[in-house]
Image (cartoon, rainbow, N blue to C red; front, side):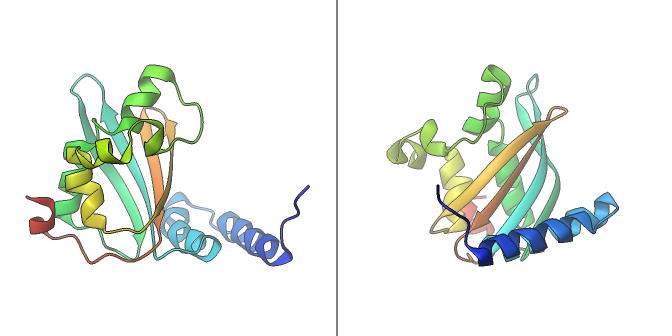
Length: 161
């Protein structure tokens, strides 16, 4: 059985204490990006509340907490145009939430690169790697992501807007 290194365990314990120190939801949400960035080595962290409307086939970003702030209005508009077509958004309502998913569970890399989602949302991030997860609660999707390197702010020309 593999043991957790003492340094990692200490970081996890500090993160848990920091998360528990926030007694109101607004304070907690503001603190989460910084706490995760201390725990998971990354250049950027984002947490979002997203609503997927299955009837209208649309998606809306309700709230976004990130550190540092990189996502511009143009990028948010691009993500909203593509939310309903995101493989994760299609999967959960059809099959239920079954745990961690990867884009590669749905698409090969060449298939992904041919999608509007990739062209408008993922490619402009210029991320070397991305760790992301999502959870479903009361018909809202809460994805979080942590990226390996900092991209420049997203410009309208990068998204084709």
